Length: 130
Image 1 (cartoon, rainbow, N blue to C red):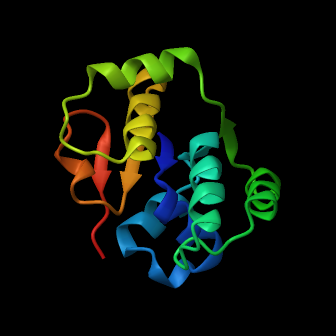
Image 2: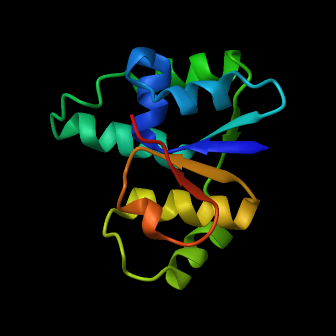
């Protein structure tokens, strides 16, 4: 299975793995799963750092390097991803999360999220409770 992590889970996986829910850890450690990160998460990290958000405390350049050297696949933002957002019902207002869900739908990925609100969407999204 190809897994896409939302930005919070991605930050926790690379900077505070003890915060990850056990089910998420098991999925990440399963060698039959492929791990994917979105450029949208890097973009979100850059913006939230500029706003002074302490919960986004990893350096985006270093995070990207660590992910790539750890074997994660980078997912660019494509026009098809942006256009797929228009088909999502207005259940959640966060544009980054909506883009991640659209990417998961278009690319056939399972989106793992720490955001219970995002899990109300139908489709390839799984809430990872702690």
